[in-house]
Length: 118
Length: 110
Image (cartoon, rainbow over all chains, first blue to last red; front, top):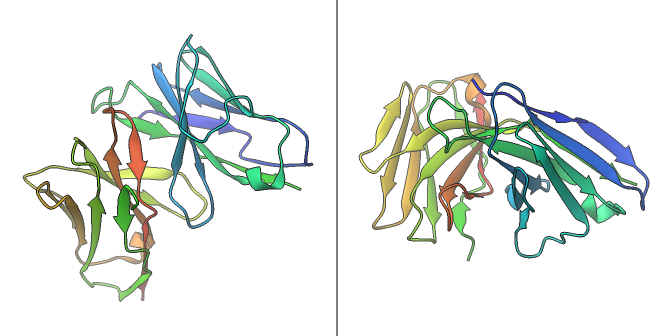
């Protein structure tokens, strides 16, 4: 099956620093990648949709200047949380679309990155 | 009103029990429906898609009622390994935008 990796799996940082999270599709080309955020005991919330070579589309209420998304290739998207604050502490999960045996519509999820901002 | 609503549980059942989860969604234009499973501190994994005709995969049966905007998941002969959170997921305004419910937690005890 299609594999999506994320790095790092866990990060602890001081308030005010920026954190970059990488999402890679390892065995397929992802036409679209998605970034989600999940707070404890809450549902996954889509933050933004990213297509290779174009600007990301952000969901309502998500600050594009705070959550910078770059999708430079068909196998890599990055999310940078700029000037992180404790309220940004969350589980960030990416998914990639395209290349699955069930067709291009299936999304394959990365293992997630747990961010803790002190 | 939430776009996808689920009973958070937890459902605490003995091994071998049959358990059913329900989910309602608000967007009548949603076209695709899924159940995902999420283990603690892990990413969600697709369990099965849900079709109007209903579909079964081993011990798991999913049903969709478009008129009532209602989705169900039935698990028969529960195993300890079924303990997880089950997420009801529907597509949103576009076919690739997934809207997640907050999940129903299942605990299967020996």
